[in-house]
Image (cartoon, rainbow, N blue to C red; front, top):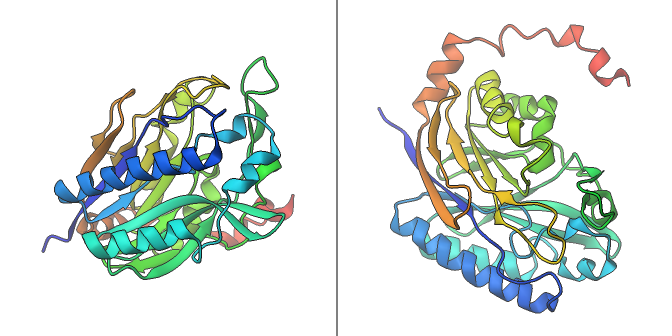
Length: 295
């Protein structure tokens, strides 16, 4: 019996210059994404994931404390409440990446998971944080350790109306250990909301995450924003969001330069089928892996 879930991946261009007031960033981005969530509903989506830090530009291109003011508590902040209302209205599961404040000075790169009835199910905090220069200018980099504390919630999997969902955020995708933990925790669909530009790692974009899907027997939705964001102009966010199945086959792929909702169907029966053929979880030898955590 088919257990097909229609998945929506929202890739969007940020339409406001990084020099504009923070309130303008949030309003413009939220309005745009609300419209795209409704578009996903029209296309039959049952679960939708937005891009990393969706309500602003990728401000980590510089190190400037003004961006701390984009933080919100989760789940008690206004954006989470808005998305809970939107989930109830549309009947869709929503994965919403935001800039979270726990207390002043403790900030996280976080994704809230909201069920189709509007219930807040929990959150994932990005575990692996890049801190590297992306170009010749010191003002164009991935300076995430300036803005975020590493995640401290592990690798949770959420029981939603459409199945068991896990989240991995952007740079996390370079680390197979967490991807495996999500599989062992029961994930059927994993989402990786990202902000990545053409350059050093683009050749990995369609290699690593299909490999995670195959190694762990789940569907994986990879989301990337599009366009060039001023004033940093650190490179072009190249989109190409996609859904890949547990065999590593591409189900749906987005464009490289357009804001759009990428729609793909995930038959969760394939998760069981693939895991029963490739018994990777059975044949693991965790007692031989001590070296993985020795250093």
